[in-house]
Length: 358
Image (cartoon, rainbow, N blue to C red; front, top):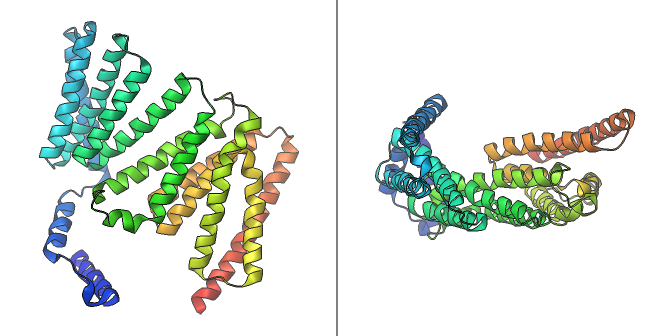
């Protein structure tokens, strides 16, 4: 009841802002809200349902393997297609939580069976990746399911990374990260426009967004964790060509929203920001994680903010570990960095407090 009242208050508030030109379908809004309430359940129930559905599907798959399915490459492919098709169909036809979890398990196992069968048939790895990406795109277009769309986004990006590794063109990971950085920035900054666009169902926005965030972090790991790829320290800075300018741009947007116009304050903010970002040129994963934090803060996306903070702490720790300095030097660097962060916090907190008083 309280949520219903809040919805009506928000509608009335928007109506006052937009005037008589604002039109909406109250019946459809209430219907959509009622449907979303039916799907709500606790995290524990969802986790147990996913685990139960996965175990049930895995048990059925074990029965097929005992029956000799693994001896037939064609059988693996056909069974995989069957699992995937049933998962997509059941997800479209039924909107129950248990069916949703079963379909997710069947879908994941189906993709694995298809990949295993095609690999056993000596189909090229590149061809297998392309087929998996096409299946994932088809799944996103048909089901519009949160979990299946999320898995599909991860599958597509995982295939891209595998192609980079298999083709031994490790430098392309910079282009991969750059594309995801630009896509995420565009999605966050144009959230309202994308949600209002009829060509993109609103249900797909959240799974695609979180899928891209996870995919970006995976991509940043490859440039933040030294030794995974062999492009060397000389070229590790390439990703920073995108991350640092985008981060500065987001800082400028946040400064405008906060309302800081004093020239001295702006000078200090940008000076602190540039001084902090310059050392991250040789560790673009840090500025990439910071970009996720700023984007999530800008649109108040709590999940992305938590993921960004965790990844930021991890990449900072990794950067500290990889430094070729003595322990004393590393400690001094951490100490100075901590002081800079505290000064930046005190400065921004003071300015925010002044703006709130105004």
